[in-house]
Length: 247
Image (tube, rainbow, N blue to C red; front, top):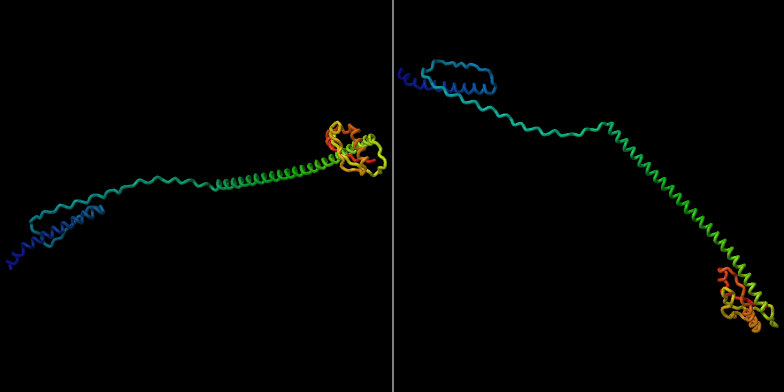
């Protein structure tokens, strides 16, 4: 019995020392770990033993160094604040709406004024054309009237000078016997401005009596110079004449 006890006793001391070291390390880790996390106040740890351990002092292990404190998070600089344009107040927006309406009204008024001016100009142009057309009609009518009057006056003058020429030729003509009053000889003569004959008379139509035709031709030559008007415009009408010579 005593031999068995003396045999087991060395192992009992070794187990006790090992248990002491394990408990010491455990409590050290627990203590420093809780202290590092929660920073709680220090506390006392009491170990309970069933029997006194061996007087041999077991060297305690150095506590593990505390972990390094966490590095502060790097703070990124805040981006510059975005400038937001101010929102126009409703009053300014209403003013802009009124301004747009006013500009539209002014533009419409200008367009209406331009249309009215264009219409007035078109009416004036139509009235001007109508007046010109009326004036042209009046002018043409007046010209026709003047031409008619001139023509009438010219005819009168031409007939008067023709009568004067025939009268002068009859005075120069010698009588021919046995010629009826219905006999008529027509000659063409070309006159100069002074009434002189340019050529001999040309017989265009015979009276049927050669003696009468010869007497009429000699009378025309004897009547030089024939009476002609002084008016140049009328003289052109006497450049060539057809003379009807009757008994």
